[in-house]
Length: 253
Image (cartoon, rainbow, N blue to C red):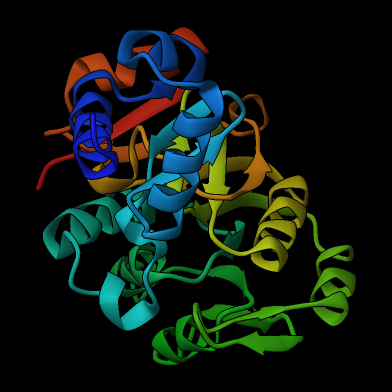
């Protein structure tokens, strides 16, 4: 089998099974494990999958920059944002992540809500400027332009002084075994610190993020409270998370 034929086979198998394991594939295709690993490395470089120990998982569409992500599943993100906003209670201290889905949370918070929102995303702060009863606390740091959020030592220092009731986390990928992952190492560090600074963490995940993986681990699923998804996500995809005891909130699109 030629290299391109083999890669086409691997692409179809990944779509079918949701994962690739190098060792059994090498036996099935009659090639060495090194050959399969080389194919996977090249496919990962092309953005076709994400390498993990022993094989590969589907890559997330959410790895693009903010402008690109704004075009992906906008109705799903609006529905998720609307449901998440309803979870915020008067008096809550809420950490709101950056990203397109978290922006929808900010847009759907009631104008009458009295609460505190902590964010490292300038766009979120601006979106809340008209909510005069919400106190907005900005976390400083170096601007990571890809996601338009603060990162670095200054951001971590500010996070260490926050104790929030609830954190709405945005990630690139959600997977039962790979956990919660994203595309930038420094951003993963910040999200992890924000998670540990809150009593509860709800992960906002539109459909394209489920059952995918990105290069850098944020936290395991055991470290979060639940997921906010849409009703059209198949039950078979959500079953592993329910078995882990996570709260699953499904928004109507």
